[in-house]
Amino acid sequence: MKRIIFLLVMLAGSFISCEDALDLTPENSLTFRNALETEKDLEGVLSGVGYYMRQLAINGTCQLMKGAYMDFDPHEQFTSERTLAPDGGEVDGMGWGRFYDVITQANVVLHFADQVKMTDARRKVYKGQAYFYKGLMYLELLRRWGDCILVKDDVSLVPQGQSPWGEVCDYAIEMAQNAVNCLPEFPQVTDHLGNAPRYKSTPSKGAANALLAHLCAWKAGGKYFAADQDYDDQTLWRRAKEACDSIISSNIYALEDSPELVCTSALVGDSKESIYETIYKDFWHEINDNDRGMMMFCLAKKYQSYPVEPNSTPYDALDQPCQIYLSEMEKMFPGSDERRNAYFYKFDEYNCPDSVKITHGLAYPYKWRNPYVETSGWNAGSMINYNQNRIWWRLADIILLRAECAARLGDTETAIKDLNRVRARANAKLYDASEYEGDVRYAVYKEREKELLFEGYRYYDIIRNGYYKTELEGGFRTASEQDFRDGAFFLVIWVTSMDNNPAIRQNKYWLKYF
Image (cartoon, rainbow, N blue to C red):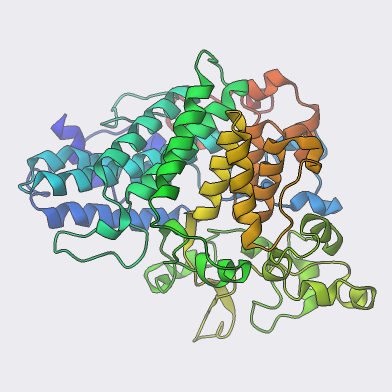
């Protein structure tokens, strides 16, 4: 067993994909028997996870694209069964290897933590962080690919196939609960020298509870397309709600005071509303020049141009891959809802007949405001990316997720209270029973759609709620229930994965095409 773990340490910085990890042959006798002997060593491995977490943003948003508002542009409609997958039938270019890089690092920490001399309290912190990273990576894997390879402790030297996504989710829930049990709340998080982290990129109890809530909600909501439906989804909804309760009642996190501050603070980093984030802000110098422009940790690069990009004009919106119409956003954010003019640049000013010749009816998304601009060379002055952190979860998400859990559990009072808390911040009209024919759960879904616009939640929210036939387009409306049980919601598996590991199988739905 130790031999395999040592090999993991040696390979942690060079994994290309999971299939490589499942087809390894030791080439020499070098081990790292004495590599991790101190707390500083463990922190070094965990710090390395930050690099891999940033790398997840390379070409990794094809599902999230469909989860945003591509379907408002008639030229971007999905109209055939072949394009039922969010990326039009092609797996995203990054594959799943980078997720397993993080899992590998976490397994190394878990293996060595018990041998390092330190207090039990510090040992729990390091283990808790490792448990968190494993749970988070499996959440991403199972939402993107469904069935995936489950690596619990060691990478097997024998080719290994996928496990059912429900089984993977159970294991991820276990990891998240372990993290909750081990980690302190964020104000008490320190390194071995007693230093507090600069950003909320270090896992804490709040982050672990957010992970636990989303994992439980995913399995509970996904029962309708699970291969094995013999489980109690109500227990999972209660567990998700309890995790949200823990975050909200801790009073460690607070909503920013306005939608404008969501854009200028919450989505930038280190905000009182942020629960967990990955650092990009002021860290671009640590990223390879060729990768900087490829990083897409939010959907802004596909939707935004004017006025955030340097030297852009209103007409540049016509060249964006995805476009948003003023008329649709006016329906989404009616009346006094302040998100309209925070999330879109000068919305009310441009939303008039006199502006059509400039806007062509398009709105200008304006949710991410801080461009990272090249300062030297032939590319000087051009925008490379956004100098902001990736915010995985913020309090508004957790409040609305609790509202969804409450609606699922029949607690309409709590659901409406949470719904109205988010609306009140935006100065939007509070809920009344005439909305959506009195369907509180759907009202919560629509509020998540508004509040978390472009943040990468919508596709997963649709799938979790089973709203795909009304909220998505094309093949999603014509596919059968069996198609979705067979894996139609998920990404195609990269062909090279199957070439390198003969135990990997395409899911049943995509096997018809590939």
